[in-house]
Figure (cartoon, rainbow, N blue to C red):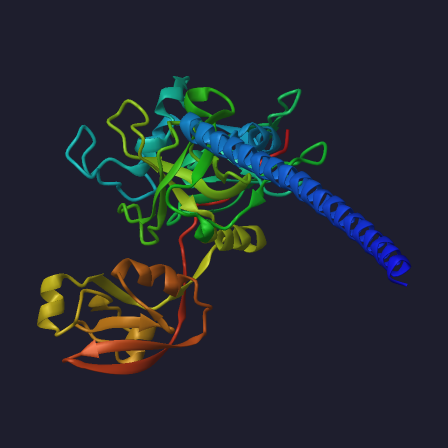
Length: 423
């Protein structure tokens, strides 16, 4: 019994050993497969990461290249907008052009060849393109089309006193039309003229100047020195510039090259939207020195809308003359910091007089808007609807008091608008 039992036991042990080896081999194969799969996924992961790194590096290099070369390309914007920018030529009797400029003087920031009596018109008016013959004077400027039926925006000083206004389009045939004046607004140096086109016209898109940021790229298109449809590029150097050009100073400053003949042309964002109207420059008498100014489109749009609707501009009227609050004023008035508008004079029978506003008052806020500087008050009043009842926060004798004013109306004096036959 002992012998057979041992044989059977040995065979059983052998079978169990073989099963164990088979199980171990299967386990080894499974581990090897897992390692292989993991290795494969690792290689793929490394490849993806490497590709991602290469992509990011390429994008970084592209960004660096763009920064190194300057601005993004404006070629597409120029191609799209160019057909909507026009050249404007005017003819006037020289005797009329010698009359005082319709706009206010633009003082230079530092002493130079142009003193404080140099008119804005002379600073940007295309004198280099003027020609005098037979007692007449011709000059050039720019403008842009805002409607397919021929409404065109430009500067007032471009067409002031003109007996004939000729508009040249940037199409294949360089079509020319005689234009009529729809209306002008001297305080903002804006004008709206009209042609009767033979076909539907290209138009610009109006943007929002309030969305502009200092340092953003902008492009100017115009007619400098008679060189039609010249494109220049620069950046927004500053916003809200007060340069003494009028009661509604709020200019965009740019270093995009603006020269005589650019007046009335558009200042465009990198998206091709009009954000300003090129108006004036500081100059040493030899053209652009990199300090140009454009009227913000946010200021111009309501003016253009009124000119198109009625041919004139009606503004709100408060009836006060103000000046800045200096640090000395602030200390004397116990103000934390300079701010607001110091009332210097109040017009008789004006809305301000009826509400009890007095000389020496400081206007701290108007219709809920806090005044940081005195020059912020005129545009706020001008944009307020006539007949509106607004609150005005005053500082008088160290105490704050609120008065309520019914806004009156002021209508700017307009030059006669003469209809002209269309070409």
